[in-house]
Every structure is written in structure tokens, then in C-alpha cells.
Length: 66
Image (cartoon, rainbow, N blue to C red; front, side):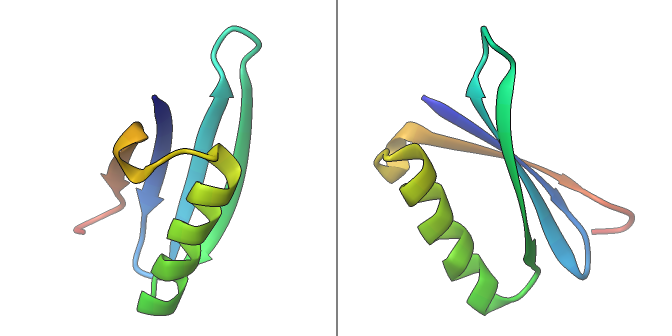
């Protein structure tokens, strides 16, 4: 299972993928909060994790009132 944390704000999505729990390795990337970049986020997740969508757990935290 792969875990991705996303901090959601009006303008952007700050993403963090915990690559290796034991070694505390992670990878981050920022996307615009738009429909186009949501597709780019999906592509990035699949390419980085090399996993099927059902093997990826995404946790989100909304900033402010979102």
C-alpha cells in the first residue's frame, strides 16, 4: 500500500508520498488546484508508485474553509 498526503488549498495541492517508512524517505510535488492538474496528479502518482489505483491511499487535509 502506498500513502499520499495532500494539503488542499484554493490555489494548490501540496502532495507528499511516503516512499519508505523505515528510512523516512518521501517525495513531494505541488500541483495547481485545477481539473487539468488533477489529471497530472493521477499520472504522477501512477508513475512514482508503479501501483494500481486500488493500492494507493490518499489522505487530504483542507486548508482554511475548504
